[in-house]
Length: 399
Image (cartoon, helix red, strand yellow):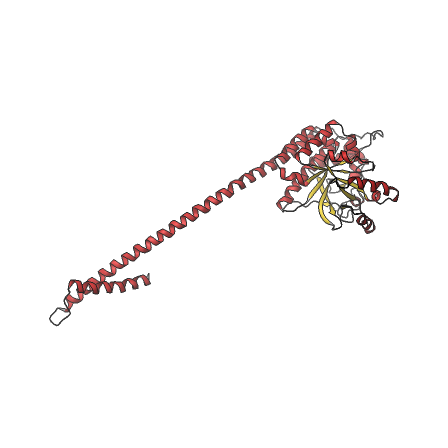
């Protein structure tokens, strides 16, 4: 402002001088009253100063208005860009919110079934003519010697069944993860998901103790279904953290035959297509061979959505590779002891030749020692799993 007044003063003096010449103001001669001369000059100077100050203020005002107009246009453009970006983000948030609601509904539906459970009864002895799932899902050695697990006190079958029912109702079916690594890099590519029943006192009941009992009581479908929903939540968490990792999750015949759950589960996944490539369903060789038209039909439906499958608990190396391909089974798990058995070496090699070029990857599981790992590495197998790479550990919950 001081600079503006100074400039106006200079211009005012110039204007006053010019005006005095034009108007013919009297010179400050001895005959002229000096007061009149000075007064006239002062008035002219003041008028010039006011005129120039007004002109400059008007110019500054025009410049300020121009800048404000440009700023307003910039703000409008920014608001428009934000609107364009916010709209899809709001849609994504809405979709994510809807997905979470679906998961909660599914979990509630699963747990609600327990309200119809009968009081604990003494479980019937297993029928030898129908092999139970426990025979095909015995816990691996790392599961049993995990230092992170709390040893469960000895329980009879009725107490185990009651503990399982109580854990389901109280949402104490814990998720443990074991890495599956690429060979020879030993880089984590997948995690296999295991369920652990946590008793009210915090003790873990391992699968070898509760699987057969829960299956006879008709609870395995609910346990497996809860595990699948937990898998979806884990995948969403890895997406949030931008981790490129996949999960192997067991899908039993009990789950496949649960029509209501499968309908809700497929509806959930249809709304979350990005989760599909990161989830591999795992079925045992015995269940795949025993699967009827309904089971195979559900597998075909899952395959059309984009899911891949893995076959584990392999006890017979006479495998129909074409059947694996028809059902989109892209991973084949073989026990390390079976792969390294000299008596089975010709059959293992024949199977590997049949798998060449099919896109089916072999996973050597239950690798426990460095000696076993060295032998597996020499055989050129794609993936490894076992205590040598990490034991099953509790999944970390999202913060």
